[in-house]
Length: 71
View 1: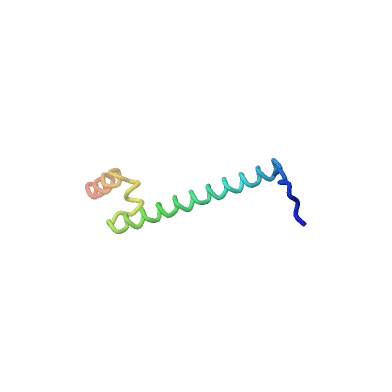
View 2 (view 1 turned 60 degrees about the vertical axis):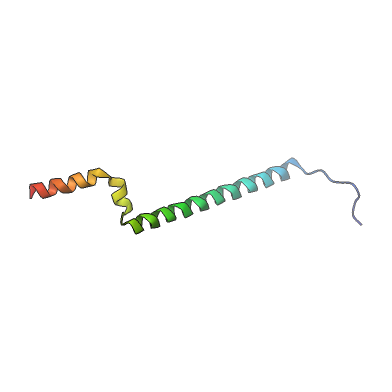
């Protein structure tokens, strides 16, 4: 039958378990970041702003005005 004494866990097993917990935590963080990015993109789309417009900022508007002025 079973032993009445408690066996000590090896350092290797504890290291494996710690690495697994860390990997799962990183994966959960990536999942949350992806979810937030998707929500931000959806909110921007609902507001009528594309990601390219948001990245260009005011520079994109100035370039458009220059093109109209040169025509």
